[in-house]
Length: 303
Picture 1 (tube, rainbow, N blue to C red):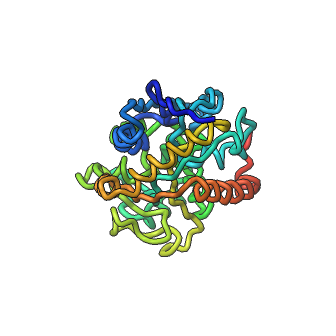
Picture 2: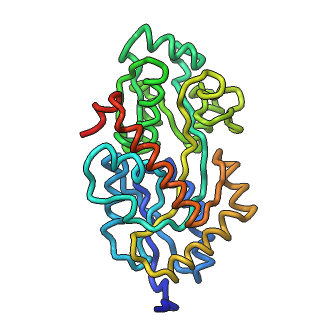
Picture 3: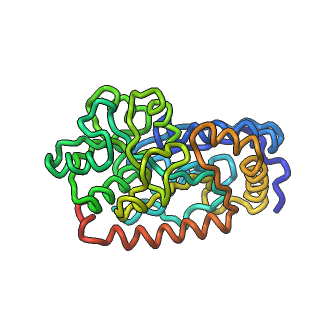
């Protein structure tokens, strides 16, 4: 069945995190995608909570009509379902396309008693639980990668969950938290002004946005690798022609030089994956995290 009239009203894109983080990426591309879909507006809505599962579930429960979409990192789809029972699963969503894949940064307060990643590890070993680790919510990528880092380094932080980048920023700048692991988009402006300090990257190599910080895997030998993907998905059952229209619009924007330039200037690495490629990447991550979360070290995270 053709849906030539779609879209007849604004399209809502739910971001399951608080403002000031990955929603910035979606807000950048929304106007250009809107133009390619005939000018109908795209409204980006933050819906944080439950480690990004609240907003994700809201999309799962929306009518599959192409008017409610999900822009998210992969953790709510590939990590959270292996931590606790949820009212959705990965197969409840139809991938439209991936936009970015950026290594995370380990970031600390500028006035912290550790100035390098090795000094942080030494301090944390000598002072178990004294380092407050702020995440964007229990079960989110920023939280789970932090747990993997602690296990690999043999240290223990005190986890302080928040609902997004803005809350994490306030906690770090205000001194109630000491360390975060997050996307460069959120943290590089404060690092560049000297208000925060970048200590390491979770990529296989140094981040192009912070070349002074070593790779946890390649240079420290810690088994921590994360290049977080953020992509657009729809509830399963959206008609194929609508998915196709969204995919074509997204591909045109994401592979264009303007988007590429905007992302890099905003400390984000663009990476377009078509629906099949994005689905394969999600399946691979799902397999990895299913095995990871089954490990005894993560027993405390499974509810």
